[in-house]
Length: 163
Image (spheres, rainbow, N blue to C red):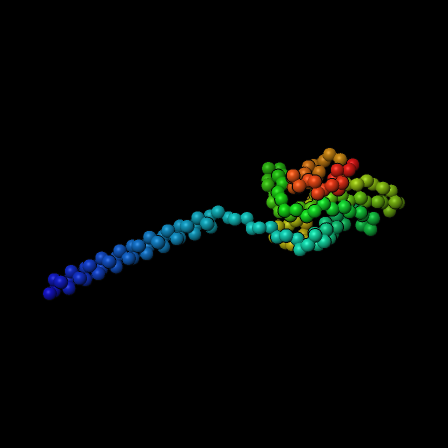
């Protein structure tokens, strides 16, 4: 009888070791999978500007620091777009807004239409992260707008096509 209790205890211990081994294997597999996820950072989705109006207001605030007389600035905006551009070997993804600004000096001298490109901060709503502005005509700024809008370039209409 003592032998049967011993046999039964060793069978029970062996089943328990098997269960622990299975549990340990599952735990290690789960830990490895989670570690693999942590090793590959996922870029957060960029926050969209609150509205088209708020995006345009953010562009105005940004460029108000560039020009001496903000009251004379005349803007023309293309649609706000979620896209990506390649700058100096880096791909920037997010919300972009292109258009033109026409400054007029205090002496009422027409300076000419300038093309602008803006990229919104992907982590803060309604904040322009970076921008450029150049005189109308072939320019890096126009090329960046072309990249951002790609085949959707048609909505830019005369915002970027006219000299």
